[in-house]
Amino acid sequence: MYKKVLIANRGEIALRIIRACRDLGINSVAVFSEADREGLHVLLADEAYEIGPAASKDSYLNIDKIIAACKKSGAEAVHPGYGFLSENEDFAARLKDEGIDFIGPAPDAIALMGDKLRARQTMESAGVPIVPGAGPVESAEQAQAIANKIGYPIMIKAAAGGGGKGMRLVFKESEIQGALRSAKNEAKNFFSDDTIYIEKYIQSPKHIEIQVFGDKHGNIVHLYDRECSVQRRHQKVIEESPSPSVPPTIREKMGAIAVKAAKAIGYYSAGTFEFILDNETKDFYFMEMNTRLQVEHPVTELVTNVDLVQEQIFVSLGRALSFKQNQIHQEGHAIEARICAEDPVTFIPSPGLIRRCRHPQGPFIRVDSCAYSFYEVPIHYDPMVGKLIVWGHDRNEAIIRMKRAIDEFTLTGIKTNIPLHKSILNHPKFLDGSYTTQFIEKDMKNLGDIFKYLDDRVFLISAAIEAYSQRKTKGVWHLDKESRWKNLGRKMSLRE
Picture 1 (cartoon, rainbow, N blue to C red):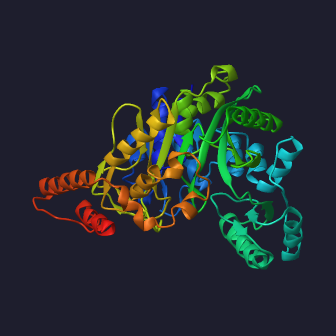
Picture 2 (cartoon, rainbow, N blue to C red):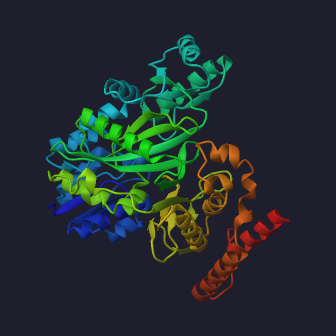
Picture 3 (cartoon, one colour):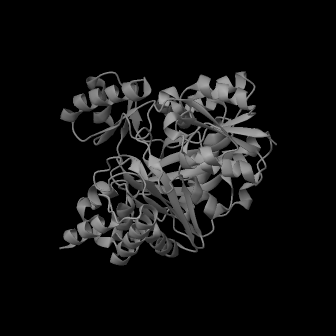
């Protein structure tokens, strides 16, 4: 077993990995930027090292500084979490050269699947169904020829892309030139690579993931599916497992294909195959593979009773998988809501001081969060401050439990997307499971109405706690501009 593991990340995922290490008796090493001095991961880790200014390129993306922290601390391995350097093959290779284990897949697997165009070609050769398309695309004329062949609408995508960057949806020929130009420019800015390809756009799409896990001995299994179709601007908002839209026969077929694809590239560690499912025909197509732990991994953990982070550590040490395919079963239903410091209507980030933080509690509720009272949410990073995950014996019970837990989740002083989650959880299309990736844009057009589902009692209780807390700590009554009292008034005016 490792004696020390460095976590090359921040926020709630750093905390998740620190806790997994502690359960295994491993000392954890945190790194932090100047903006994260008061981060909870810094306080919880056994050791912590500052690695530079707030900007990610000078800290969390600086390979030299992270390796220097490894050497200074004596860490034998690095867990990258997700984001930042988690899918950077150069980082994984540098660690190997330095004699430090990378808790993740081999560098060549990261490189192969990180190039979306090469990944498409590899999966097609392995017999995995892919969305009709072609690339690389260099000109509008070439794009038009491809679109005429596969039919509109089409999606223009960056080969090195992810997170919705470098993507443009095109419905007709006159839109191609402008969309191609803007997609290439965005890809160049975000990924330093403007290679573009084209795929047929599925008009009733579901975003379904299959979690896979492999070891260095050639054993590979899948841990079933996750539904990730509640998205805004290609960013996931709510995830659940199992998907309410995938029939059991299709689920088994998707799992088998994901295992076959992982074996084709000799994959080990945690990985996720992302598929587009046509909600009408139930045909599915490979979209991409993420060679890392996913943000939404907790829903898989709750329905399979497998600790994915600990298993990543075991595989990195060279151990065989702790389970076989016939030992993995989906039990019950899990839902995850991403809690973000952002305006729930405009999605504009809302950094600032959290005045009051209270996490929901109770059976079958899990909160992975870096938020606490008087924590300053920095402006420099992703606005997600936590994840609320619940489990139920079935989907209906999980939804009811999530509604109750969301009502108890209190974050004041900043705007959050909690009201958006309340609205989603009460929407008929979410309740019947028929929602697609177009759900927020098409079915929730009037986002100004999201406050209509909030319970007055929740606002009153939260406002009273906030006011009492401020009176107790400051000796005076004070209401900041994002106070629950003012939110209550805002909600009432919307209802009127």
